[in-house]
Figure 1 (cartoon, rainbow over the protein chains, first blue to last red):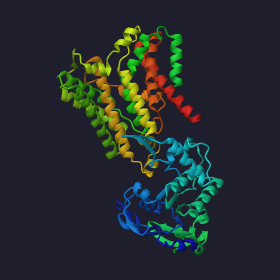
Figure 2 (figure 1 turned 180 degrees about the vertical axis):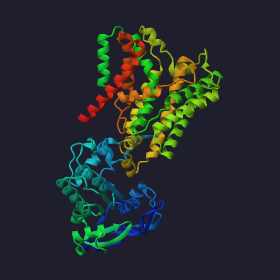
Figure 3 (figure 1 turned 60 degrees about the vertical axis):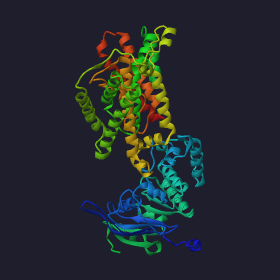
Figure 4 (figure 1 turned 90 degrees about the vertical axis):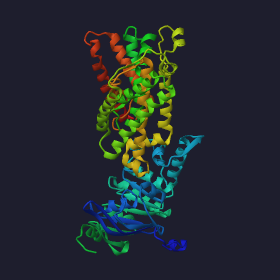
Amino acid sequence: MNQNASNGNDTPVVVMERIVKRFGTITALNGVDFVVNRREVVGLLGDNGAGKSTLIKVLTGVYTPTSGTISIDGQVVQIPSPRVARSLGIETCYQDLALVPLMSITRNFFLGRELSRHLGPVRWLDLAKMDGQSREALRDIGIHIRSPHEKVGKLSGGERQSIAIGRARFFGAKLLILDEPTSALSVGETHKVLTYTLNAKERGLSVIFISHNVGHVYAVADRFVIIRRGELVGSYAKDEVSEKDIADLITGERER
Amino acid sequence: MITLLGVFLLFSLFVPHFLTMRSISGIINAATMTGVLTIGITLLMIAGEFDLSVGALMAVGAFLFGSVIMKGGSPVLAVFLGMAVPGLLGAVNGFLLIKTGIPSFIVTLGTQFVYRGALYVASGGIMLQTIMDAPVFHLLNGKMVRLAAAVENANFQTAFLWLLALVALFQFLLMRTKFGNHLFATGGSPSAAKATGVSVTRTKLAGFIISGVLSGLAGIMLFSQYKTAKIATGAGEELNAIAAAVVGGTLMTGGSGSIVGALLGVITISMLRTGIVLLNLPFIPADNFEAVVGLTIVIAAIFNHWIRGRS
């Protein structure tokens, strides 16, 4: 936090205000406020169908909100597509969604942002350069891959997650969204992913960590935002609440 | 690749007249036009889609090309129309899929009849036929006269050279360009493709347009060789092309495949047809050889699946 102040930049990375999202007659989000500060890991919690995913999909341009505003670095923005979200520095690491199992590490790493060479109008992929850069970028955050040509489908869940995190960092993301990063992982793999999350924060990124598993979120998050049935329950600093409190707030056994 | 070599070796050893110039050129020629269709089908299957309208679009291409030439029109215009209109109809397939979300298998199952019906109405149901000789026929699918003169029974057609060029071009497109990368991503995991900013709809639309254009080209090649086209031209070719793609190692579920594989697949199937007819086995009457081809397709699919599981 002190470092934050010395940077002289206290503008939150993301401010979402009074976000409403309706699907026909169903209200998925009913006026939710959500803030992510710089170099902060925010745990986003809620039961199935509470609206976590919808909120994140609004932020990443998958859904357009019915009403409400989004500001990135203090600027009000429209996010009509995932491409725009990425250009604003928002990267999502889904458990499986953002990687194509049948494609190589390199091709996944640069998917949608391929490096090309060209001769006149003919453009082709610069595979050698992409191989080198992806290998280097992964080594940089402590991930050693056997070969950049290896298919992502052959990797373990934690390795896949690390590829996604390495990719986000390489492409200059300022906000990393981890959607259920640990839901299908073994204990050892989970530990690795939590370490990468903290590494990402140390390197200046903000992180939204979405999970059902209160224990995993509690281990890494600085602050917890809880939503229930499309509405904000509250935002709590780590020293304000215990794991038990959070679990009760998610289910609604305790109100605020 | 292994399947192709296996079939080739087996037939070479046991089938009389198999390893002759006559049968080899026959195998190649029979594979050529299906090969052109298979390139488009393979691209689409990699993107997770099917195009059952390629046979009908082949007929549309053959008709447009043939009628322009027969009216004494410019060959450039004939080739352009014969490829552009099927390309446009391919785009219609793509639009229907994207706008309605109905599986492409169903969309193109329907549109193939619509396209053939439209061709029937537009042409009055006639059979197009000519005895005229145009240089464009020789260029696109003529006999390679000098080769035939040099080597006895080497009756190769120029279209095979075009096919080889197309295979090289599309293999490059698939493996070495952004578009190719996006095709693999679109079929391998549409959600991941979207999440990384790949335009899944645009990629699929481009695939359908390419498939349409190539179908038109196959029709043009067909007319150049036989100088005839009818409403039923190309019927059933869509399934031959899908079979060739599968034998060539392309996944039915999308995300994996290759154009070189497609070429090998189409040659393998053609080899089987010729080989089985030449074998003349008592329990496989010549008019039932398709059953053996069908069996091979199933075996090849299982084999490919097994190899993929191991590697």
